[in-house]
Image (cartoon, rainbow, N blue to C red):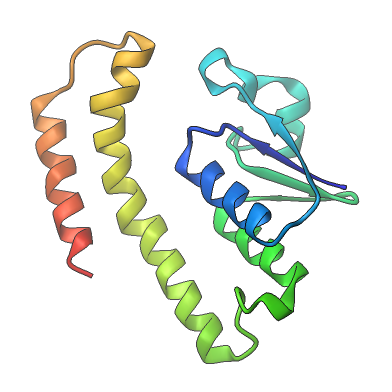
Length: 144
């Protein structure tokens, strides 16, 4: 059985979990408690030297990076059509995954950190300059 190491509030974890459920794949979910340093546990750091989740384990194969995991999971059910069989379709999926990683997620991460994570973890008030930077990046990314 595949194992997914995730922190469910994370968008990267959520998208991997959503696809696994959509494809009805048999996965064991293992929560990595990022708020309490679960990513620093030696057994987790051995799976991903970046100490980030999500991480997938499948019969001795370890894969990290959410978009790579998405492609791997989609390949498990080729008839689903989630991962296109043709090169142009795959390139289109890769384009949007690259855009998400390079533009969308970084913009959203600034806002999520300033408006939510700081409050939850007691790191102080939102920084107005960072909020403005995040909103600018969010608006630019939304134009696509």
